[in-house]
Structures are given as structure tokens and as C-alpha cells.
Image 1 (cartoon, rainbow, N blue to C red):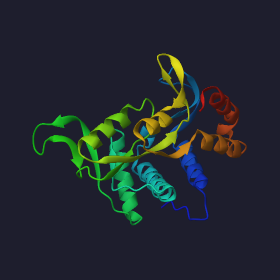
Image 2: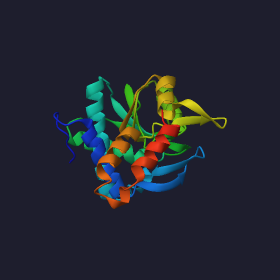
Image 3: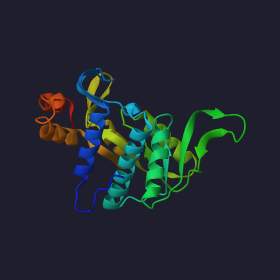
Length: 234
């Protein structure tokens, strides 16, 4: 179990997470085209945490980050919600790991298509009540968050925060033009809720700077990622 004591900073947790993501080749370096059409020197795909061990470890990072950050920032919540489809294993894993740490909370997730037999409906799990944390992998266009907020509010609950794995801290794009805010910043401003990330682009740069000398696979990527941030970062 991952445990970062009170004498360690959240930077340690983010470094451990990035190291794990590199080891599992979830975080890769090269040339990758983003949805915005930019050529990015790195790519993060949480779907590649696709074994029992890696999902368990990932869930520990989610749970530890949520508990640490909400306590530090005074964010109160009653349950977790995972948007289909990537959010489903993430929310289930996070709640199990939180229970192991003494915080047992309900969780729910949605179906893409409503079920017309049995219990019916589009929601699975606990009823959406109180203050709800949305659990997802990343925020790109913010579509998943918007749909989640609509579902949560339609059921009489309120979104309390969004928990993601990686914040790219990168300008959004609208009508082919760069915006002044990142997708994360737009979510925070639009819905008035905080976004909590296990790691962000600043953490990644720090990780590359400190690890590139000892890892040949990381050599040279600090400068490329730094240049990308200078051009597209917020």
C-alpha cells in the first residue's frame, strides 16, 4: 500500500505515480498527435493500466491523492462517481482503496445506454446523494465532466470535485484557435468545482529533470517537454 506520511510532500506521491506510469509504458515519449492536432512529445493512456496489479496500484494513487488533497484543501464529499467507460474501474478501485484506509464511501457509475429491463435506468451503484467527486483519467474537452455534472445534479446531488490522473496544463482549442485556459481551468471556472490531479505537467518536468541522467529512456525528453509547455502551456 502506498502511504505518504505527513512529513512527505505530495510531490513524492506524484513522482512515484509518474515512475509507475513510465514503467508500465502508460506514459510514453516520442511524437504523438493530440486531439487538438498538436505534436506532443509525450502521451498518457490510462487504459494501459490493464492488469490486476497495475489497476490496484493505480487505485492506491487515486485514493491517497483524494484523501490528502481534500483534507489539505478543506473539500468535503460523500461519495464518488465514475463516468462510463474509463471511470468505472477507476471509481470502483478508488473506493476499495479508500475503505482500506478507513474511509468507506458509496460509489456509482452510469451506463452509456439506459437499461430497459430489470432495475432499469442509466445508473449503477449507490443513489447519487450529497457531495459527489467525479473520478476520471484525464480532462480533454471536458465532455465527460459536463455529462457527469448534469447526471449528478439531475439526481439532486452536487459535484464536489473532479479527480484525475494527469493534468496536461495545456491550452485548450476552440474553432481552430488556442484558448487562454486549459480544459481543467475551464471546468473549474464553469462549474465552480476544484480539479484534483495525481500529477501535472509541472510534476512531469521535475520528474524528467531529476531522472533523465539515470534512465536512458528519459534522456533528452526534459527539453522537448519544456519546449512544448512553453508553446502550449498555461
